[in-house]
Image (cartoon, rainbow, N blue to C red; front, side):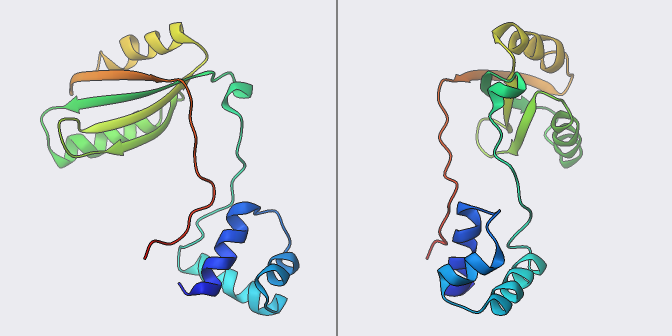
Length: 151
């Protein structure tokens, strides 16, 4: 990515609903050039989609937790199967395969603490491949919405 691509991506991260003409004006290029650059960014997989940022509480997901889990046996088949199946659960937002003492980091949202407890005891604790897990409740969450390329 060159500086122009980075500028276009920055504009899209700030507001993906702005028009191509507005983006072109802000980065100082012709609208046709901007449209072609955006198409190429999509084709190369730099832009993977456009998403709405939804307030979780408005979807009755007021409690957020991070769950670390260890699985056994530690094999590619177990890791892949667990990752796919756990990602399908409605409470799960994200699943990360990690290195270190934990094998997975699972981001979970539920309506309340009782629902989180039910998820942990009725969904996670009963899985045969899980040998242990720990849960941290998230009080606050801040996420960057505009990222710059690292040099």
